[in-house]
Image 1 (cartoon, rainbow, N blue to C red):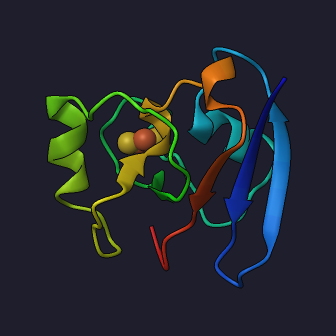
Image 2: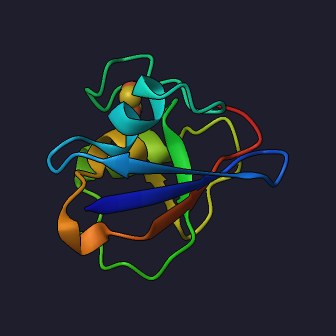
Length: 104
Ligand code: FES
C-alpha cells in the first residue's frame, strides 16, 4: 500500500491511498484535494501542481524540464519544491508527506 498525506493550506491533513504508477498530481486531482490543479494534464508545462515535499523520502532529482517549470511557480520556490506530476508513486514512497503552496 502507498499512503500519501497532503497538508492543506489551512493546516489540515488529508491522507489518501495511492495506486502504484500514478502520479502525485493524479492522486490529488482525482480525489479532489484542494490547492493543486494540474492544468496541463501532467505534461510538465504549467506548474500548477507545485508542492513542497515535507518527508525525507528519496526522490529522484528534478529533470531539466521540471527545473525550468519550478522557476516559474506562482508561490515561492523552496528547496523542497517539486511538481506533483513528475512524482510517480511507488511503494518506496509510502508515507510521503507534501504541503500545498499558498497558490498555484
Ligand atoms: S500538471 Fe502541469 S506541470 Fe504538473
